[in-house]
Amino acid sequence: MAKTPHIIQADEQQPTREMYVFGGRAPMAILRLPAVKARTGLSRATIYRKIQSSEFPRPHQLSQRAVGWLESDVEAWIANCIAGGANDR
Image 1 (cartoon, one colour):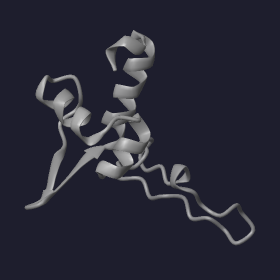
Image 2: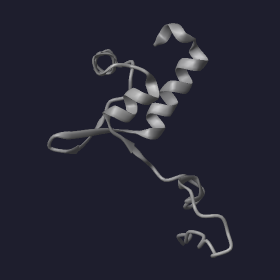
Image 3: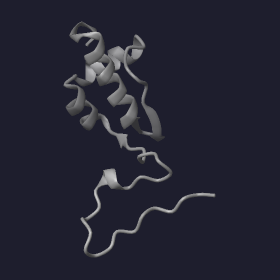
């Protein structure tokens, strides 16, 4: 049986993205290239070079001309870089 999300009452804090937890998991978010560049500090060329060498998560096709990365994949890559040292970037 699926759980229903909590309904925020008028006197409660306004909902944030983190508050929308459904079934114990945060919702998935898709990041487009500008957001990925901002989060990682990498250039477009470096991101795609790392994808080619399997050092960065592959994007998902959103439409014929649009791709995006799962936020969780990018965050995991960042955490791995921090845990593995700065030389892997």
